[in-house]
Length: 256
Length: 256
Image (tube, rainbow over all chains, first blue to last red; front, side, top):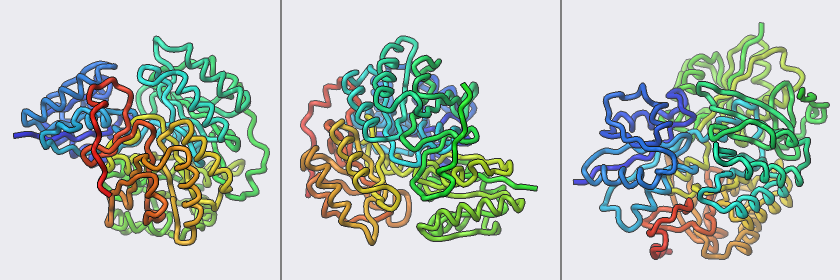
């Protein structure tokens, strides 16, 4: 008798921003599988349900384990931070089940992804077309990432960077910043959000020219504005295109 | 004495996918402001709280009204479908308050945006870098939209289309499809989700060559895969890059 797998996006990491449907699915699970960091964020929820945790870059093993638990009859909740379908565990589970699902039912419950959480804290930077790009060179070649960054910058997308740097990966971030700055210029507004809605949250703004030197980590999301993005009264705002008189007002000067 | 404004993303439109923080803010509101369609989706929530609704393209008046209510002392909840910061009301409120906030506190509560809701129903199409593009030519010039579409297609982004067509706007959708198909070819997998998680939900898949003829509307999100996206066992999956043996398996043939 096989069980089931539910892929759950827990959002930024507080139960207040986790969908009731996700909380309900966690409540029904007989085992919860996830990256240690995300499991810790839901420590207080359903503490009696067994957990299976593993570290970063152990996604494949974690997915295999989740499938094994389901085959043994477990109702498995696989959690990802943010949305499980955005650089999360969903793809891996479907990949591994491809042609070999044993009829295991799989459901995905969407969550609040990091770029919208970061945007909510910054103001309104995502009011126009945007591109999400992960700077992790673990699974994608740097040349491909750079090509996407340059294409997005040239086409005036707001650019959201996931995984901007890690403890072992800083040089590529600086290469990426230089490539974008060459296209958009040094004055372009940038927002940096660390640990959105969690302990240690910080919300910073700077100009493109300053981004290369910024302190960052895997818990940060960076949003680079488009041509119309400005800072006003501490908020990062991208014009949606409404013909407002106010849009021509002189915008606030950023203190550096 | 001025009130406050909370911008709320209600997600796909069911309370089960609306963050507890958003539900709490709705509960505290003395008036709820929104587009008629989104107000209707939360009909059953806090039915005694007064509503102020208006139609499509009345966003500016709605935002001005919300600010007026706040100036009169109201605790105003302004709702958007999905995430309030993604083509939603957040930018407009900040734009209008620019330099003129009277000290009105404004908070944004993020929500589950349409592209992640659609992706959850399709499988795992967003496992790699993606671009969100609205095809509405109401606020952005068609030439700019086409430029972004072509840039995203060439750089191998997964492409998420918001507002693909409306009752009055079909021709541009076909132009947009032709432009993308020229770059990615006719075989590229496409997912179409209508009314995600609501009455009338439909989840369809097709090939790029068929998209131009598809029946669509403002309640649809279209996801065009990247080079690695495939259909397998009814799911739309974009490879994340893990070196899985399974990825070389022959993928399912799509019934047309």
